[in-house]
Image 1: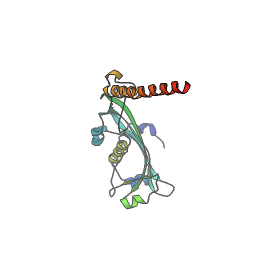
Image 2: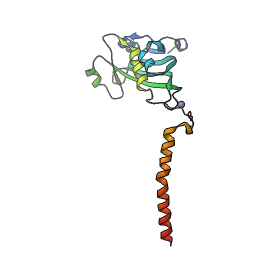
Image 3: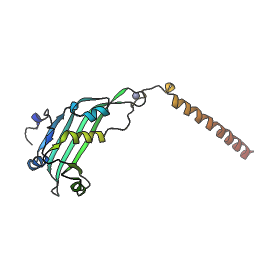
Image 4: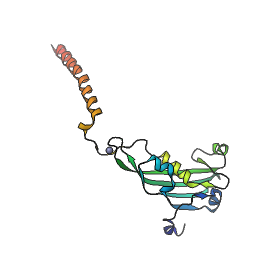
Length: 182
Ligand SMILES: [Zn+2]
């Protein structure tokens, strides 16, 4: 593909006719404004910058209309330990088979995820948003120890219980050991 550099800042169109893009073997590379993705905005603390996507339309070896590519973005999630925002980058592979009904989708090979186009309109933002939401981590924790251990009451209690359980055992073993030897 020629002229790729000038495409990079393009905004991905929201509504496309995937059938036409497949015929042209179109490559879409650009960004989706995060402000257009309400469900993503509701699922995270914030979205840093815009969502980036690269999509290649074409026929696969079995002549299925397919879209291959990736979508990625940077978000802030709440750390479940300290409840402070933490950055997370999300990247999802795109392996779509374009169909017009759920029935058609069932006949796709397993390596293609069915994406149902409505007539001659496919809402790309919606399906790209789906991919990101599917790849968001369920829970997030800072890599570093963001809360000092002595302030972490739950851990303190379980440690104490652990010691209490451990001590009688050690005493028993010592008793056993001494009785075996003597
Ligand atoms: Zn944290």
